[in-house]
Length: 160
Image (tube, rainbow, N blue to C red; front, top):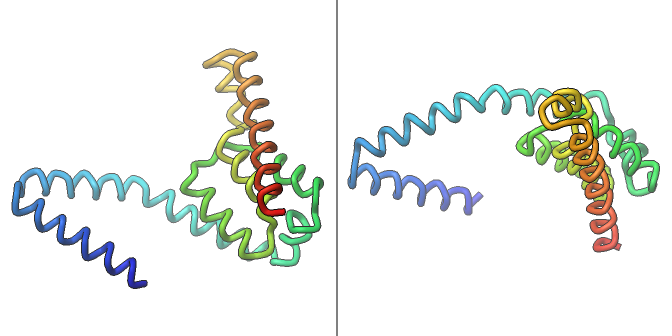
């Protein structure tokens, strides 16, 4: 809490300094920042809704049984399959990963899930094939799955 207060204080001081130096540029930057926040706001609300919905449907014991410490390779397979469905931006994935770990999911399984969520997209595969060609789309998604699994193995080895 104290570090948050320090950061807000420093940011406010820099804002005041910037306003003092050039109020027109500062106001333009504030308008631009507000516009960016306004554009991201629906995604942030979607994150909160998605995480809330997931937590209401999945109890901590169910999360633990699917991708918990004892789920092993089957949990990694579930994480890989679920994460490969759609490409999801990192600002949605990271809060979801934290929430899953807090509710009993194991770190290697969550690492694979988060990595595949951000790098593999079977739903967007047809568009990717049309844009970049079939061989590139399959190679990129296949490499992303392999790298996600490697990432999970590295997390497991570091934590063991």
